[in-house]
Image 1 (cartoon, rainbow, N blue to C red):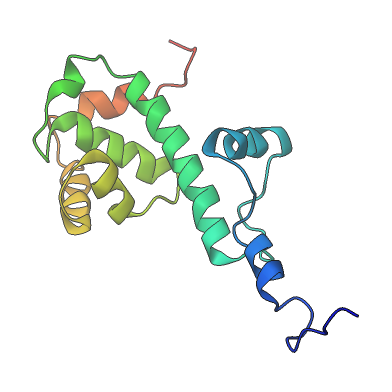
Image 2 (cartoon, rainbow, N blue to C red):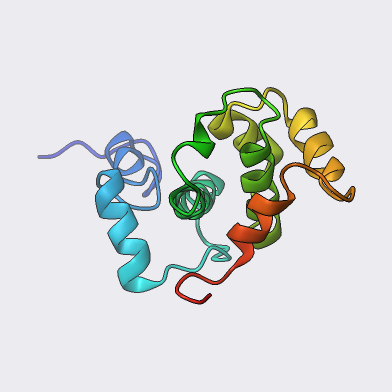
Length: 143
């Protein structure tokens, strides 16, 4: 006779282990799943870690696209406030719900406050990042 678990259904260790995350698989599988099934970020039934993972995957995809649209020699600037970094951060803030913390980590821009400060300074006329932001704003495939 099989012993009865003292935990309620859905709370035993085996079930909990199978219920972690929004999808089981590697990053490539999850990325394909997002594209193939157009997973909605707003799905309230998912746990917060799953929603965060989906949002970060979309942010990463947008970041990679923006980076690919800038010349390699421009992306060599490593300073925290390099114009290309400020332009990429501003572009992602315009087109996604990305957090300053995530941008600071991905672009090596220091603190989230530093990202906010430099994206705000981009509003000033003649800012060095303006040409790069304008290039990122162009719709891919159109002149």
